[in-house]
Image (tube, rainbow, N blue to C red):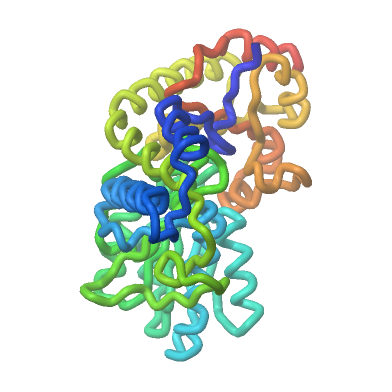
Length: 376
């Protein structure tokens, strides 16, 4: 049986989440916007409960959590939604990093083509940017700072708390793409200086097609977002359309279970990572990024002298892995993340991403490294 080790691309559905999801497809199928009967009332209550479950994870108010189709939409709403405010106020300078997901980089390219200035901070060789870099890049007209929580390719955790401190005396909005970190690293996302947080359900054991954008207030002021679509007024006018109740309930349940089982899940992922590190040391694998700053569920490693495509082909009957983001894997080019880290070309070409979760079965790591070693 092939071991699934591509959880950064998508996770399996948690059994508790699946149970709730199916109940709201088969039995509680009401429209949360229907106010004239009990089916609608129960659906609305379920949505509000899910909103609370998501809000608890990041310590925000229930009305500050807006449901979307996933982190890509949340990122677009956060970034492009600030365009009008930036143009009105003359604040058209944005700071981000060169290692962001394309769901952040491409909306910012769109803004740059329309008169905004975007600065891309380069990471160090360990894969992280610093608060000092952010502070040095700040200008009086900075509208937004956007820094991801956990890198999807390397698993490196970015210093959100330190960056938040660097922004303490500045009005710039702070956006975090938390697709890989929500529900897995709790404390950092509870920092009240994080104004906008993008969340994806299918990274935390909920189905695909659901996510959220946290729009944290400063005092009584909401982030001045302009909607990207119109019609219906749902989600405080920011994201119109009939609410997918079953998907929302699933995300809420996933958020609740992630908080409840956080320590147990982390312990299991750490166990798997120790085994992976030990196995790859046997064949001289070179880890990507500072391993002291990575999440326990991700291991990016290069095998000197071997191309990642050849290795993945050799391992396809044993493990399901990747060499980068699933969003760009159809047309493989050199990873912009590893390139930004200024790693050698042979490391970039040989890098493999292994990512797992608490539901991952035991992996035959010795067999994995045996197959890789046979390619030399």
